[in-house]
Image 1: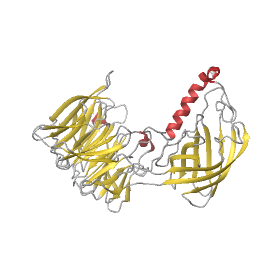
Image 2: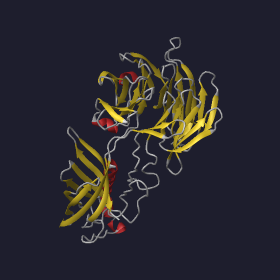
Image 3: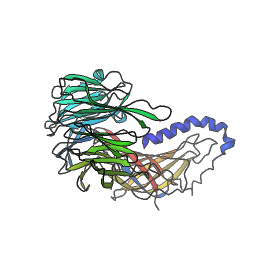
Image 4: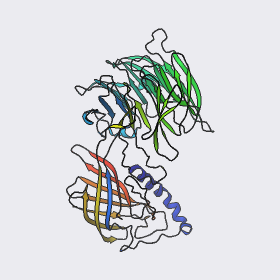
Length: 509
């Protein structure tokens, strides 16, 4: 949310001079009545600080006892969870700050959970989960060739941790390494320009990569599927299966490989194809709306599809591959993986995206943290969430200082605790019509509050264009569109670092 606010501010600053010249067209905004306008921070408010963190990249050991989560607590490169107790047991390494903005992170785990591999930016690390030490670190960039951004895209580790596959590069390649020592074994080349998905069977007998090329003027996007047998020394680099098709942007390309390596599923051409890799027999299934991910049961008999319904809500469908019959249609996260033992589905992501037909600032009750579902009935049996959703109750009294500046003080209760004093300021700018209007598009008013007894500083922004629009029901809906509300971030100081989390505030009913 911080980046969204900053982007709006930058855009308005850029437009301000032009709009100043066109003041006669847009008119001069009305000055606020300091004593009565609801946009002044005065009276009772409710709010939240969302200090929850989760991960989009997760992996589960073959016995479903250990979960690996990339950047799961915002600090560790990998966080390990005990599945039975649903507690974080260990953090491995630390990500640099730039890794959070790279969009490229992945994690893989060996069958016994003794080894974990993770990637970010242009580095790959292999960890000993028992001792918590780094076994080695690879720079896979040279093997994958030149790249302009996020060189590494996908990572896979064999069950015995004896084979490591890393995919990426501007001209897609898959680099294969000896798992324990990290020695480069070979490099496989794939067509296209971007790696979309990578999958490897636990034993390393099958390796599949799904790549895409640039979209043409009609939104057609070529895609390419390559399946290799990397352990077959008689045909090094030869594709076991190759498929070329064309998808329609923005359809997402997804790929899944069964744990026994016998069955492959992928999206493209507005359908889901399931292929028996031994007989090459193909089964075609319907493509659910806005499909995000695929997962095959260990023997390939069932296919799970995570997607978004037309109303924006996430859903999970399960099909019997042989008959095409739908076995389940479940509201829930759209990113799914099947456990190697077949007992569970591992899902991640919120059931409803924040921007699904409603104000983008809503914080859902479901943070999107990983969950473990029983495969037979999709009941939730595990939830792996870091941090808390803090609820605020605030009483504020403003004091006028200048036409672009006022002070505010009062008390705030965090999670129903005792009231703590706070103080702060609200500031505008020359282009800000807050209290003293200008005939230019204004920047948001800026709020800074310091809480006594808490290592918190709350930074909020109030858009100039607010109305009585009600925020969405469900969750803890708070919208900058609602009159008198604020959005921003909480700066929370820790023992060794400072973290930043979304912060929202709106007038109490």
